[in-house]
Image (cartoon, rainbow, N blue to C red; front, side, top):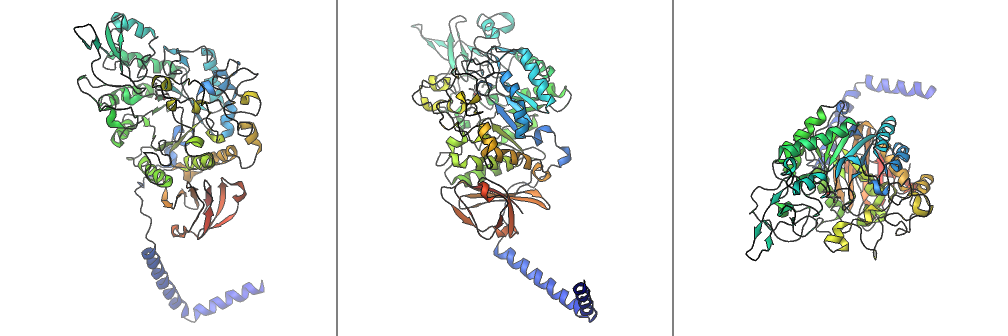
Amino acid sequence: MGLEEGSTKKHTGFCESGKCSVVIFVLVAIGIAVVACVTFLFPAVRTTVPPTETPTTTLTWWQTTIIYQVYPRSFRDSNGDGVGDLKGVIEKLSYFNDLGVGAVWLSPFFTSPMRDFGYDVSNYTEVDKIFGNMADFDELIRTAHEKDIKIIIDFVPNHTSNESTWFKDSRNSMDQYKDFYIWNAGKTLPNGTHVAPNKWISVFEGSSWTWDDVRKEYYYHAFLDSQPDLNYRNPAVRAAMKDVLRFWLNKGVDGFRIDAIPHLFEHVDLSLEERPGMSDAFDPDRYKYTKNQPEIFDVVREWREVLNQYEGERFLVAETVGIPQEERQKYYEAGSVPFFFDLIPVARGSRGCPNTLAQCYLTRIIDGMNLKGAQWPNFVIGNHDNRRIADRIGQEYADAMNMMLLTLPGTPTSYYGEELGMRGGNYTGFQPKDPFAITSNNPNNSRDSERNPMQWSNTVNAGFMDGTGEPWLKITANTEYPRVNVEEEGKVNGSSLQLYKELAQLRARPGFRSTHIEHPEIFGEVLTYIRGVDVDKYLVALNLGLVGFRLDITQIGYSQGTVVFATNFSRKNTIIQLASFHLQRGEGLVIKL
Ligand code: GLC
């Protein structure tokens, strides 16, 4: 107490003597000089990230949630037949609550001959019996909503199965369905040989035209010959597909993921040839006349209008693989959110990544945020068509990759199992199940690996199914499951799963709900950026390189921070001096500034 009095007195006396204003003047002058020097020596990191920040108050559910993709075949098998099902998803609904995930996207569960594992639908308004029945779906949606989980379902508009009644009627030229598909006679040579209308090739390789002996014409298919493309220049097709949307909206679904949308139309002039060569989904020119045709957006708009007739905000997210930037804008303008896939092909040394991994990600993150006005970013790092992160980038980077996904602005989409750092199945030596591998006769094209069953526990079959039956894709192909599974990771502090849950909570903070990102930068192979607002700011630092790296990041204007989340649990709650801190390879930190 005495000391306080003394110091106050001394201070008052100093100012009273008239020296106070001189000192303040000198201090201000020094301050200005220091700021000028610092600015000169360390120019502010220039970023092309647009400064737009959507006010948190206007955000809707799909902007504040993580979307979690469930591939129902592989998630949880409730009846022991080796294939996951809707009841299995119902059993696991609380898991999504535990994870902090508010929306689940279900890959197709509709009636299908399963040539492309459900992406070949023969009846859009039925549940395939392998997945259960409509009562299961009704229960799923009801219980999910009770638990505050939104359900997004797959909508496969580009093509049906060749076993759909629509196609059967069309090949028989039945009135209403006659023009439901893209039919063309092609040419018939004098010797009777049939020649396709052009050399367009399917995504799954081989000609995209198949001769139909019933109708005596070719039909067009962007994918398998068992997936004939619908004809969207026929208003009856458009009406029928809108009815499909209404059917599921009436059941209460919260949104749709639109499958293969860039393929919806083909150029009317069938004499136009595309660049020959192998298919490459990320090469837009490769499909100059069979992808990204302008009519797509009228259809998307029509779908959006259908959704808008329903109460609440219904979500449309589009599978826009290999689209140019201008096309993304058009998807937004038409009322959908185009998945931003450009982070997926990034892999060390891959064609899409000539520079370091960190540099590749940074460039693409900035691209992903290059949006107009209130257009909302989204990031995706994995799905059922691409190798799992642990295989693509490396298992020791899996946590850092989740840290990146969950701390970036916008809506993240996670693929089941990635929260565990799960590897894909190693099915070398097994006959591939994926039709892409089969039609292209190339096991490297197989998507079986990433579709491996979810690992719930260390019991037989990893808790994917009970009993000792055989899952549709073996679990034994992945020897790590006794350690990498929900039950075990749930008990271990610092596991991938625990980190994922913590990051999911972090996203709920207001600063993570804006599209604001500061100082996106690279130090060696360390990717850094700052998220948050005002006094609630976080530095994210991810070492995506092959070696450890020490960095000085004081130019961001902070000298130290506290580690709040770390891929290496022992670093949690430690103080970091930003002038010199080290990250091991694959290490990621979220540092509260
Ligand atoms: C989409 C799906 C993929 C499927 C293809 C054909 O790209 O994601 O799994 O094979 O469409 O439907």
